[in-house]
Length: 298
Image (tube, rainbow, N blue to C red; front, side, top):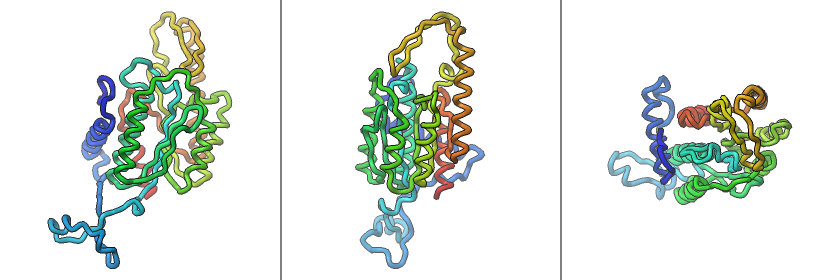
């Protein structure tokens, strides 16, 4: 696991994650999978000579042209839910928000190496940060700085308005893109049709969507607490309830299973890729799911 203590340099850690992932990928059954990174393409007759990389020509005796933003292969908008529920588990080295930031930074690192364009959207009650997709180095550093700030976030009682946020993001992305969402989707669970309408809005606008359903599998899915009294606190509303964990486990597990099943079925119905992203299981599934989707789109 990359994180033992607090995240100190998100960009550095993201590069470690990506390098380790690619090494593992080449040793796996996916050997040969398209993860080659190029910053040039071969010169074609008629290309502007000022774009030729003469240093590469001096080493290889072949003409290569530098690739620029307008030649990027893919546009990718990364969307992160930053509501207070994403700060679970509290006081942990890796909560859901930190997991999402590091996973997003790792995908951004792959996008950078492949000269793809990337944008970032952050929301809680509303979308409070939204950048257009670009591929230049200055833009990547700006996004890294935003993710670094997000890692330090520790504000209680920030509620989720994912429905409104996703509708707003769908309207603000004007070119067909791959939209990657990191969220626990804990918004209007009792009326999930509104969430699905928002996700469908992205598909209606011709975007491809991957939803990384970020959860702590041990506590939020399996409800694996010791059999003793706990004070359970809603991290967004502050509401508290004190009960023995075993008194809640059966009904909680039943409702959570129903919610996850419905979410999976609806996403399948709308052609949205959904990936269970357990913060205890590392980043491999996140990165592999992204690469598979990217290769299908290019």
